[in-house]
Image (cartoon, rainbow over all chains, first blue to last red):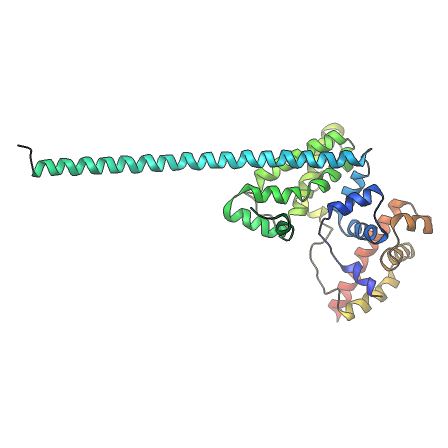
Length: 120
Length: 188
């Protein structure tokens, strides 16, 4: 009766390859049980598998996943670039401010120096 | 550069923490990619159109990328599921005007916590007795599925129930068993 433990277990790990095998109907009895056990305990997995079974061609689902992941990476890349540009923009103002302060300091130094040691 | 194997061992919450710390969007990319297949399946289940499902997943990703930096998410999986489901239901509502939108609370029946130790001998004994308290269809389906490791299709063939009935009996049976076990453990 140790299998009773399965009823109370919660397995949240996602194994895409396992799901793909299940959907293609080539999963072993043990793998099939793993997937169906997750379906029984997780509404999202259950609905996802039911939805994926509606694809006319299981390969199309795999292609879509690859496309979506590639688009996601592009979006993330754009976001990172925007963030980097923003940082550069913010930092450039800091650098300008430092240069302005240094210039004013130098001018002030030379002005004071000239006042104390006037040129002959 | 992080190795793929290393990333597979990092939990969702750890990746979220890393993102919160350095705000590097690559962590979000890794996280969201884990759910692409599931999200595509969920959107397909509701929209029943392959292209529409793909577009819906893109929208879910966009929402997630925008919202995650500002939101404190405890369970990413259920959070994404809620967003995907509500997005699809909104689309269906726009077409049919009758679907009600669910909130996160009422669809989180897939508990992500363990209120008890399933390995305890006492729990197993209670569970064994509780199984007998289930109604006959639930008891049959739960026993065939969990104890005899039969597939949904095999249970359909053995019992004569429809696939939907089998899934429902297993899910409800499991939920009932958990409730009974929690009650009995509290009484001890």
